[in-house]
Every structure is written in structure tokens, then in C-alpha cells.
Amino acid sequence: MQVSWKHVKGHSGNKWNDRADELADQGAECNDSAEVIAGSDREEDETSLQPRDTTPMLGITTDRSEALRIMRSSTLHGVLNVSARRKELNAEQVRTQKEKCQKRLEDGHRRGDCSAAMKDMAETKLRSATARMQDPRERRRERAARKKDKYTTQIFSTIDMEGLSTLRNGKQHETWGGASSKKTYGQTIDTIADSCRNKVDGVASLRLNFRHSTLGRDMVEAGHVTGSREYSTRRGSTHSRARKICTGQHGRK
Image 1 (cartoon, rainbow, N blue to C red):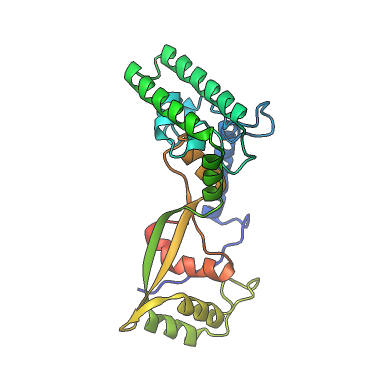
Image 2 (image 1 turned 60 degrees about the vertical axis):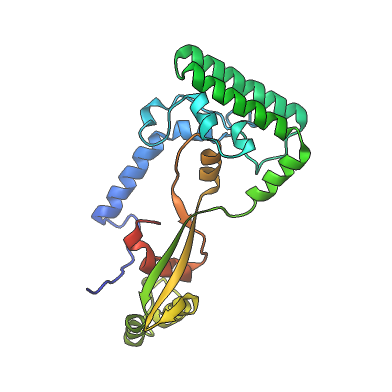
């Protein structure tokens, strides 16, 4: 089987490109909830990752239960519904955030969003996170960890080096990606080959690391969503082209 890649210019009348634009427009119409959850500038309180009733989007985000959000959260900042990448909280702000979460927890329980047992577990986790966040060292530890990439997936993709070499020799001086590209097949394939490891019997592996976007990581760590789109951490146009070779079979972007 021979695989070829062709660059498709945006807004050029291509059937599937136009379809992608339509889907993007539909997603933008539902984006109001996501913007508020993200803590947009229109919110009066810019400290919290403010949740809103996302009922129309339950299938792709999460439900509105504060108890379940707290139980899904994976960091101390996340429990308190704030991002560790923002300005550091002081002890008073930590207490204020705890009170806001406690109020939403109680309001949700009255609405029937969670059981009494779930509410008790969420309150226990909230109290524990609040106590730990009173310690400046805990806050600094999480803020330092937030600055580092947190990989969600690693893919080791196998590459047929002989086939790659054949492709290089046949199209060495052709541009990869169309006339606007500044890289040739030869340059791109050489970079891919240099990135490969464990070359045995003409087959090599290329490791690709994936992570959530900045906002996606905030939402996952705070428990607002159970998953988010993953992105390769490799940078640059050459690595982007290498990714096209290696990740199509895995359904990643």
C-alpha cells in the first residue's frame, strides 16, 4: 500500500474542508459555556474556573454536579476549582475558594445532583485540599509542577527505514506540503530518520509524546471534564510532517 500526502488550502471549495468549517461553526455556537468555565474576562470573578449548567453538552463534557467535579479533580488547585498556572493564592483566598465550592456542593445536594454519601466524600476531599493549600510550600510545589509538561499518551511508531529511504531518493528535491513549503522531502525525511531510535533490521521507532492543551489540562485537573483533545509536544514544521507519517493510524492530532 502506498500512502501519499497532499496539502489542502483552507476555504478553497474542498468538500471535506468546508464540512470541517461547518462543524467548527457549530461548536462555536456552543462555546459560551466553555468560555465561562475557562474563566473568561466577562466573568466578575476571575479566580475560579467557573462552572455553568452545561446540560446541552453533557455528552461531550461533563455533568454539573459539584460533588462529582471534586471527586474527579486530580490536584489541590483543581479541588478548589482554580488553576495552578495563575497568580498564587494566599491563605485567605484559599479559604474563600473553599467556601465557594462548599456552597455549590450544598446547593447541588439540595437539587438532587448527588447523594448524601457522595456529598460527604466530596466534603472530606475539599477539607483535606484546603488544609494542605494553607501551606505555601504545597502551593509552590503544585505551581512548579504545572510549568512542566504532563504527558497523557506516548506512542512508539514503527517506521520502515528502507521505504523511507526509497521515498527520499525518489523525491529528494521536491517540496513537502506544496509550493508554500520551505522543506524538501530530503530534508524532512533526514530529520525524521535522525529522530528515530532502535534501528533494527531496517525498522526503527519514533516516540511521540502527547499532552492536553493548557486550558484542557486545567479543565481535566479541576474535574470539569474527564478528557480533552491531546496534542503532540514536538514543535516545528518538520516534526509536524513527521507526525503525519506516524500518527494517522492512532487517531491523534
